Picture 1 (cartoon, rainbow, N blue to C red):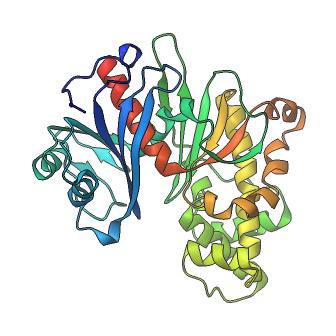
Picture 2: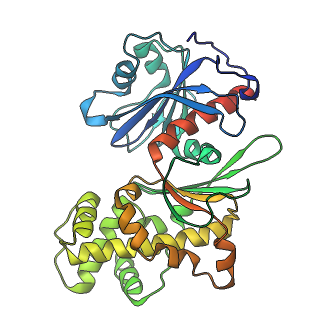
Length: 339
């Protein structure tokens, strides 16, 4: 397809709309897609091709984009969603991506005329309205809900949360610092874990428990409470041991993780009025889908007194972050063009 420098607003585009690239850059993987505006207001982005790359196999993002494109004609535009802060000069301040990122350098190295950069979680929130069959796991609530404020939460290196809000003039994304809120506990084990964590700091945040590093924190605290040595060093190791049932403390830590996640998501849904749905997009969650389904997540999510009835009307799904990232990046870009 022939690329155009300035695509028209999505609502007037047809299947002949020019394609462009969308990439979601994480600390471990990069997801890349060739996308196209669909002309459908409800689902404005059509995925034409989608691939996932391991960062360690490539010297930089330009190499990944070039591999994805191969010998095909270069599109005029590429939008990159990445953790971090994009400066006005097109460079990115980030602690999680293994290589420097620069929009201008990517243009030079790939032959794409215009590279745009957006925060990864803002991009994920822009994809919220398009989540339907892409749900990895439906945890509770109806299959769908009336169009309304939609919460996207992702336990990863930290805990990100954003609210997608439909308005008469197009959607607005409210970025939050929900991961920095104080962690609330509900039973004796969680209280003991919190007391242990408070020995090292005066404030224990939500993401100090509900993130990849947070899972290690929970495991270390459970080991301390049980008087056992902490032998596992990575979130993947804790998750694998918990699912396999080979380490009692790892299993208890993952059970606590799921319970705290349910309780916290219930709080957020009420705080933000997320009547349109809740989507969990953290990389760890699809790996523990069966464990999560069998855990106390749903019971803790609904344990909000008389507000339990309201929460039962909100669909809660686990979704694959990477695909949402590229769809969201593309949605953000099309929104910017239409405005």
